[in-house]
Length: 335
Ligand SMILES: NC(=O)c1ccc[n+]([C@@H]2O[C@H](COP(=O)([O-])OP(=O)(O)OC[C@H]3O[C@@H](n4cnc5c(N)ncnc54)[C@H](OP(=O)(O)O)[C@@H]3O)[C@@H](O)[C@H]2O)c1
Image: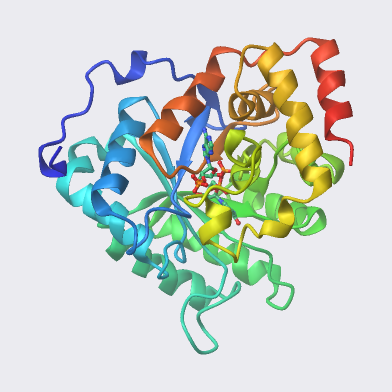
């Protein structure tokens, strides 16, 4: 369909999506959100990107997660989203919760990386232009900067909200101790941290072990998990080798073939059997498992097709696990 002629499904909020309160805030997030890290760049087919965005919104996915450097090239995922905003999404802007971030290498020289006020402010201005937006709903510090005083980064977040360029702020991948400084500083400046974004999936429990999940809850913030399918490993994609059209085959930077070692393969095969016994695909079970309790506000999936989004949404049909299933999953995940 020509994206200029897109009309969302009128029953999009009855399609099965559930919404969870994000920490102690007024914001409800869809249990499944869509991230634009991969597959929405300049080299990806625009009609497919538009189709995925429209399909997601039609299914009640109201939260779209971006960052300044998503692409490739950097900035191009935001540009793609900006095209959708201009051509089809504009009338529905107020139904959407759009996030972007800054913190990683973005432009050359000393001011295009890390956590300075200079970088964060300039980057958000650029992001707004690319996305054809006046404001984002959520702006993140994408990573902790050990060199910049935390107060500088955090005050920049506060001021970004005061300027009306973001409604809420969040932190991503901050270590626990620094995260506590952020929660305290932001709360003291009347811009409470809405959310913590961290990697969380069956095969990576770091945020559980470090206490990041509990810390977010204790501070009234939500937690949103990224790469919930371990970039595709927690699906049927790699059970029988590396498909030519997979992320592992064409993107050697973030998902290297070494990730599919004997231990991982054994674990995903064991998890796959448990999923089948539950009547779910491995991807469905992996997402459902993350949503089994209220420590997680939402999970951000990635997708290379509308069909994957459709399949992943089926996870929401059963997010309850028996103690026996949970034990079996823990055993299957052991290295
Ligand atoms: N804050 C941060 O630093 C950070 C870091 C990373 C990600 N993120 C956010 O999290 C989002 C999601 O990350 P992610 O893309 O790594 O998430 P993911 O959901 O773990 O992996 C997505 C990939 O898995 C494959 N896949 C998805 N559904 C599938 C299915 N049903 N069956 C088989 N394969 C399936 C696809 O890869 P194929 O290409 O192989 O089809 C898809 O691109 C990002 O877009 C971004 O918004 C944030």
